[in-house]
Image 1 (cartoon, rainbow, N blue to C red):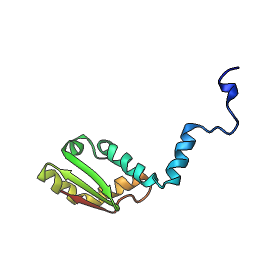
Image 2: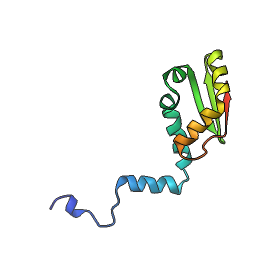
Image 3: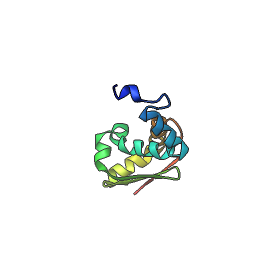
Image 4: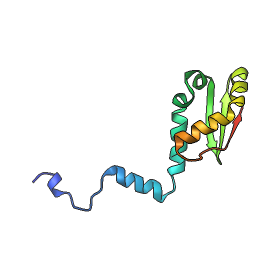
Length: 101
């Protein structure tokens, strides 16, 4: 008898179990925050990603540490565009403000 034949009918695919775990512990928001941070270069491009030294999201506020005062100033002018882009990527309002440091 093969191992597959021994499986019980109540077994679930791993993805389904992980999804249930994430929902049960309300981790969906945190997982999406992590996804946004990991995909920052895709969202903002290589030049911005290169100058971004730290990114964090807490209480719907994104905190960006930018190592160029010129780029920080440019990003400040496009703040709402960045908020919209991040929220569109997330699929819901994950941030409503950005602090540039």
